[in-house]
Image (cartoon, rainbow, N blue to C red; front, top):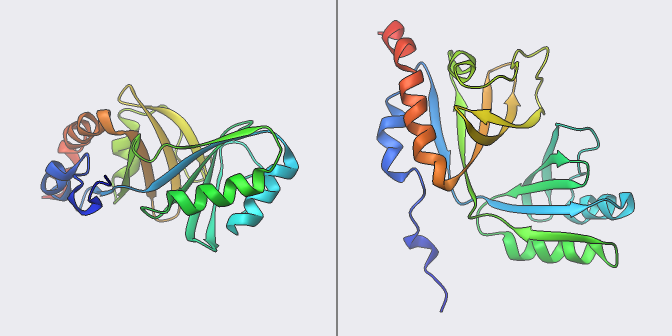
Length: 201
């Protein structure tokens, strides 16, 4: 039996109104149910072949991500380690993307695992986004240090996250957080934003 995908409840569904109330100091919007495929492969030819299969090259530089449109739509490919990547795409594309990656992997040693249910994504922006993140994250997010395309695994309020700099100039970030820690992170964001909301009023 296949579950009705329309009946799914996102990890932060109950927090939508409270997150919306943080604006304009901070805009926080959940992007649930994204396709997320963890890819482990070290063969450069296989890595290049996977990029060609998707139409989006895998990142060559550590702590970066690439994005673009390919045969399955819009993609982001995140560098997580020397032989580890995370392919992120729109919801419910896991099977065709995984099939394409496995075909491109061929006989090379590697692994492709659908980890879509493991994390949810939260898009963050607003005039005080860097101030709020600085309360709980040790990464220097100044545009000169963390330009657009930066991607790091780090801690935010002692919670393991993947942090992407979506647009350094405008101050747009994406946080990928484990679903089981999503509500904790939402509560922390609400608390960390209090002083900036007061300054806006």
